[in-house]
Image (cartoon, rainbow, N blue to C red; front, side, top):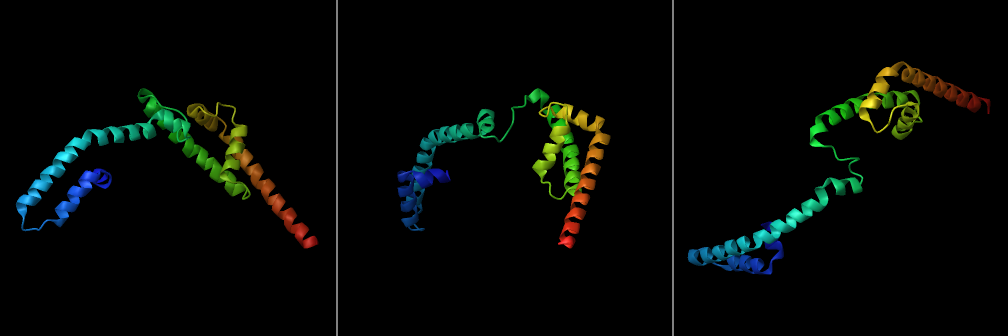
Length: 166
């Protein structure tokens, strides 16, 4: 209704008339309010159609996928399973990423994800398969994190020695 009053010139005129009437002239105010209500009812279908079209253009899965907001549309029947495995994968993955970043301070999140992606033999887009890979290869991932930590410490020591030597 607010959009109608902002856009429609006739409603703006009626609003101005309503504001201009005396508070004591109740019959004139009632007549103007009736005209406003009639005009709102006349415009409702047009504004409803425009709002529906606007929402359809923005909230459809095809549009969201084209904009890169989502990777894929999830069928309702599979949604619970899909989001369960997505959440479990992200929890495990975020844990490994934080460990990698702690082991090597030069790594950012994308760099840590690239290391995990390089190690992963499963289909990276399949959350369940990646989660199974993480579970089955936890020791290998932990070893890689330890190796990276050792390499990072060695690099820091070498940098400090080089700095002292100069």
